[in-house]
Length: 112
Length: 111
Image (cartoon, rainbow over the protein chains, first blue to last red):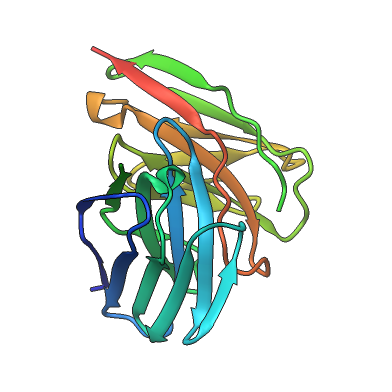
């Protein structure tokens, strides 16, 4: 069966520090991968999606970047965090055939 | 992708059916209706999706009107664990595979 792993689960970072969140999917090949963010009390915002290795599409201009170095690995990064980067970050995967999204457990980032 | 409109909040009594409406009046012929829910501090969970026929699974039923401009998600016997934010999303199969979440409906199941 397919599983998705996302880490770290929580982190507290100072403003200006770098960020790296990692997501891996097991049990499937060539998934579509997504990064969403949810600010406190707000809805889910799609940040990036990828339909293949090295293929990244950005939905909103921001302080973050994404990379997909391997088929089932998706990384969210920042060189210098801002206070507004705080939030709940969710990685998800899907297969073209169904369109269903399967989400990880999320990473809660607090920037101080 | 077509925009959806949902009431911001609803409530129902435990054991009763919860009927969550969604308007998607600009939906096009190749766009599907998806429903997800998000329990506090967790990732969203897929519930059901459909194109034009009514659908049912172990979690819920999806009723889509004949003109496809609205739909209703039915939880037949709501439990306290069904308290969550429910998202109705319309998406075409050719729209870069992404799902855009709106504000959703916050459902409170009362004991």
